[in-house]
Image (cartoon, rainbow, N blue to C red; front, side, top):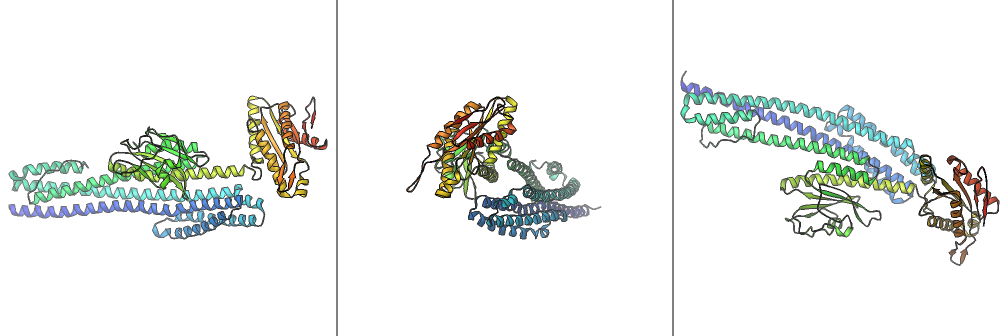
Length: 603
């Protein structure tokens, strides 16, 4: 066979194999695009459905806040959120068009139906509240059935996400298998092309191109083994060998880019999984301290080599208090006022780095002289500050840019969790306090009594109770009006709070009745304490315009366990002693009868 024929045949074969390699590379790239599309569809579905769960919880919170407080702004927020939920449901109705499966649609449809049923119950509660039936309204919104429905909605949405994740993972695995197949075909084609070139160059231009062919063969072998970081030879001659070298160079660059994208995708998925776990843990937290523990554990893993500190709003909402830190950040004030941070002043991220000429925050010691790049991120929800996240950025610009992206995501999740905890604590305090007197209510009293009796069983000692009833309280309402009666109750509550602040607890028992719990106090000391309270109440004088109310007194009943009986009968014994005081002429202290002795202190 003539050399020209061999060359032409080799050339034709080379062209065909090159085209085949290009097609397989395109097919491999297409498979990767399918993988990215599957992840993108899953993200879009999650984004559309996540709003439903969040809005349902917010809708429930607004309905509860309205029923608890009666403020119209909460009702307006509730009605506005109802429209938002309806819009979310309208968006969800079209999820089938973007790739949701039947099982996923069923799970999400169940969640939407449950949300509609929950909205009906919320409307019924609001109607009951507006008609004056507070008990029915609270039963609607705070009953176990209502909480179960909330949990079922959350479970259905989680089921949808689980099904979506499973289907997405299957699609991603299928796309990866297809990409690996086409990569193998592409690598085979490249190897075949290199082999033909080697034969042709051996017979035609052995001496001229032997050395380049050997080097190219070594490069191709490394690329076939996916060693894309191998060094390419410099070959500038315009001929077939040069074309092949350029094609291999492009293949190598594509391989490097594909490896980079795969590494970034895997890293991003790992970080998102970590952030998801962190968010789940924070949602399950009951206190700020627990949230701080979750943040201190997860943030250094999600964003390594970035020291930082979390600040939370203090109790009087006047400044920030350090809650936790990680990786030893630079020294800073553990507590500072809001104006000491420029990020809090401006309500946006505030950087401290050499590239930006800006004012350093006063709560960072030596921030204007330190070479560390850092940022203060206000944690805000509903345009209200709940905390501050301080992070020290890595020096590498690309790493710093990626870190800032994840820091913003972390800040949003942490802010939402802190806001939820603060709201939960506020609602709990509202539920445990008497709005008229400011004392703890009967529900809080039952909790404290249970704790005191539990301590009594474990370590012994005594627990005393003082029952107090304002004498002839109906007279104040009938004579001076109900507003004056409320003033009397508030003044009595102030006396109780002042005299029991250190070692006791005062509660409004109901109506004009009050109770004082004294853990670790004997009957004699409790009776003395009751007598001191009685004398203080006698000194109360209320001025209402030209009217002076001063004829105020109260009757007392004192009981102690185990002196007078068991802990279960403690309040019944104190109540009986109270009625004995009222039967004996009021304005006196009576100690419950013990098995051995009973006595009465009379004013």
